[in-house]
Length: 160
Image (cartoon, rainbow, N blue to C red):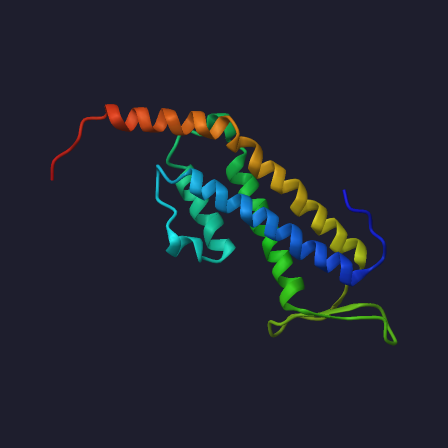
C-alpha cells in the first residue's frame, strides 16, 4: 500500500501507472474469454470503459456462480477509471495563493480542491482491484470456461 507523502504530482503518477496495470488485467480477462467471444485487435484498441462493458456482457453468457462478484467488481473498476479520467484530463494547479485546485476539462463543472491523499487513495484502489480482477482468472474462470465449452460441444447444432 502506497503511503501519502504529500506530493500531488507523484500521487498522480501512481494513479496513472496503477490504472495501466489494472487495464492490463482487464485485457488479460478479455483474452481469456476469447473462447466465448474473440478479443481481436480491433477490440484491444477500445477505450477501457468499452472493454469493461464488453467483459461484463461476455461474462454474463457463462455460468459465473463461482465468481459472481466479478461483474459488480468491474462496475467499480469503471468508476475508478472515470475518477482517473477526471484527474488525468483535468488540470491541477497547485499552491499559489490557495489550495491545490482541479480544473475540469469538461464545461460546466466547477473547480474543486484536491489533495495528495485523494490521489494516493485512488492509486491504492487501482492496486486493490488489480488483484480483485486477477484472482478469479487463476482457477474459477478456467473452470467456468471449460464447463461452457463442454456444454457448447454437447448442444445439438441448429441448421439455418
